[in-house]
Length: 449
Image (tube, rainbow, N blue to C red; front, side, top):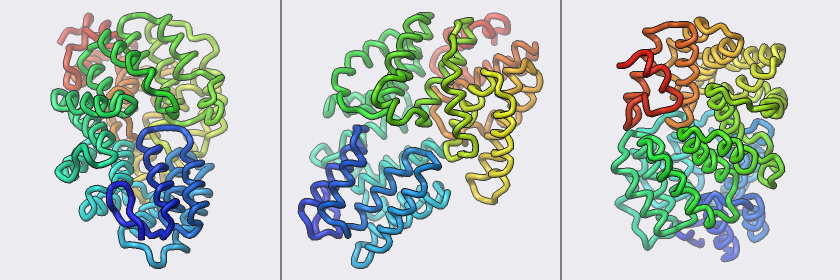
C-alpha cells in the first residue's frame, strides 16, 4: 500500500496513482478546474484503485445535478467491484458515496464524520462533511467537525490552509465573527490563492457591514485566483453585494455581466446552470429590482435554465431561485410544473423529501405569490417556515434574499407585525442595525425598533 499526503493508507501499489490522487484532492480543496482530468489520471495509473473510482463519483455528485447521478452510480459500481483488499476507511468512503447517490446526503455526512473520528487527517472526508453540513443547513455541525480535527493538524500537514478556511467559514456561520476572521486571514497568509478562505473572510465583513474593506479585500486577492472553478463567481457575487450596499448599482450590473454571470466565460459555458451560479444571479436580480433597478432581459436566460431543470430537486436552495426566474418572466405553466414536482418528490419518508415538502414547497409558492402581487399570501406562506428556511442550505448572506422577500411582501401588504418580525430577525443576525442595510432601510425608517 501507498500513503496519501496526510499519511493515510491507500489501497494502490502504484506510486503514480497515489501521487495523482493527492493532486486530484488538492484540486478539489483549492476549487480549481480540472478535477475530472485529475481523476482520470488517477485511474489511468491504477484502473483498480477503488478510492480513485469513489473520487470520480464524488466529483459527479458535487454538481448537485440529477443528470450526473448515473455517472456517479457507475463510478460507485466500479469502486465497489474494486473494494476487495481496501482499508475500512476506504470502504467507508464508498459507503458514503452509496448513500449520497441514493439521495441520503445526511447519512453520507454521518459516515464522513465517523471516518474523521478514527482518521482526523482524512482531508477528503473532512471537506465533504463540511460541504454536506453546509447544504443541509447545519452550521453547528460544520463547526463541531472542524474543532474535533484541529488538534491533529498544523502547518506541516498538507491541506492545513483548507482546514483553516473551513474553520473560518464555520465560525462565521455559527455567529462567532471575531473568532472567524483571524483564522481565515491566516489561511490566506499560508496560501494567498485559497478561495474558500478569501470567501469566508468576506462573509465576516459582509455580516459586519465593512463594505469598502470587503471590496478591497477581494479585489486585492483576485490576482491569486488563476485557474479557479465556479466558486470564483460566488466570490465576485460577494464583491457585488458590497457595491450594492453602497448603492453603486452600475458596478453591481457590471460585475453581474463580467464576473459572476458572464455568459461568455469558459466556466459558464461549461456549466451554464450550475446551482450556485444560478443562486448568485437570481438573488442579485431580486435585490436590484427591490431598489428600483431595471435589469433588462437578464431573467430570461435564467428562466430558460429553470424550465430545463424542472424535476431536478437535488439542490434544494436553488429551487426558490428557479421559481424567481420563472415568475419574473411570467412562465405560469412552468411554475405550476415546478410546484408539482416538489409535491411529488416531497411524498417520501426521508430527510430530503421532508425538506422539499415542509420548506421548499411553501417557499417556492411564496416566491410566486410575491411576483404576482399577492403579498399577504406570500407573508402567510412564509411566516410558518421562517425558522426552518435554513434547512434549504445556504449561508446567512445567501438566505438573506428570502428574508428580504418576506420583508418586501410584509411592507407592501402593510402588515406591521411581520415587518417588525423581519427587522428583528436581521438585527439578531448582523453586527450593525437594520437601518444600515439597503434592503431593510425603508422598513427600519417606517417601523423603528
